[in-house]
Image 1: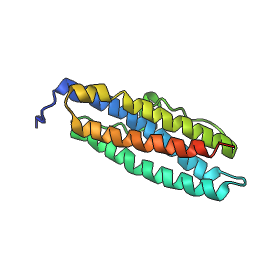
Image 2 (image 1 turned 90 degrees about the horizontal axis):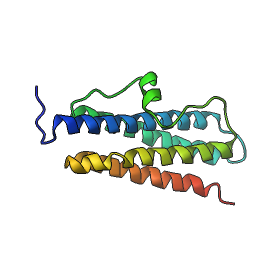
Image 3 (image 1 turned 60 degrees about the vertical axis):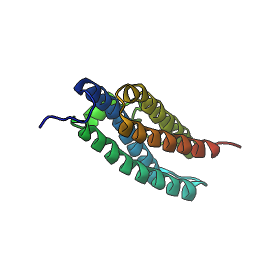
Image 4 (image 1 turned 180 degrees about the vertical axis):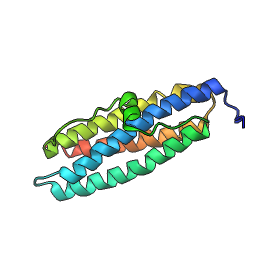
Length: 156
């Protein structure tokens, strides 16, 4: 059935492409955060283990909301490691860094998601797509706050 939500198909496609990049970055950050949750060691173990768990649980909910918005716009959501790898600005890494390096890499990941989200705003504004703009605004706020909290752990 044809979609008639007041947003042109070309705008919906461009929005879905931007949201697909946001989904890929969010999912890649989810995996990285979950990995660090499993593998963190050292004097900050308890604090970081719990903090990373909170963060990956929040990301698990976020990827669902992003994918559902892509679907509401009428396009398939990417859902494979190959697609995420192609679309994401955040790269996977081998090995297990030290706890402080984990924090640095997660700050970088959070900030990358913010940049990816911000790139969607001009298209959402042009298409008068308040629903996408609202979703992205919420994601940007959460990732900026999480980056700040992680960054504060690095202050000496």
